[in-house]
Length: 68
Image 1 (cartoon, rainbow, N blue to C red):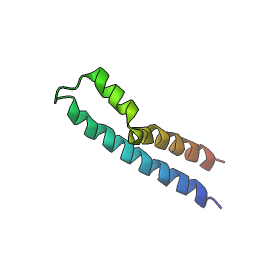
Image 2: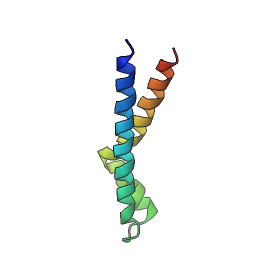
Image 3: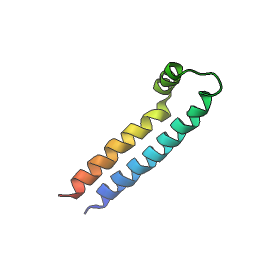
C-alpha cells in the first residue's frame, strides 16, 4: 500500500515544523547582540536545526514517490 509514503510525508512535515520553529526561536538571539556570522555558526552546532532541511528532503521524496 501507499501508507508508508504518507508516513514519510507527515514525518518530514513534522521535522520541518520543528526545525523551522527552533531556527526562528534562535533568531531572538540576533537582537541580543549576536552577529549574523555567529548566528550561522550557532545553527551549525545545533542538531535540531538540521531537522528543517531533512524534513524538506523527506517531503520532496514522498511527493516524488506518490506520483508513481
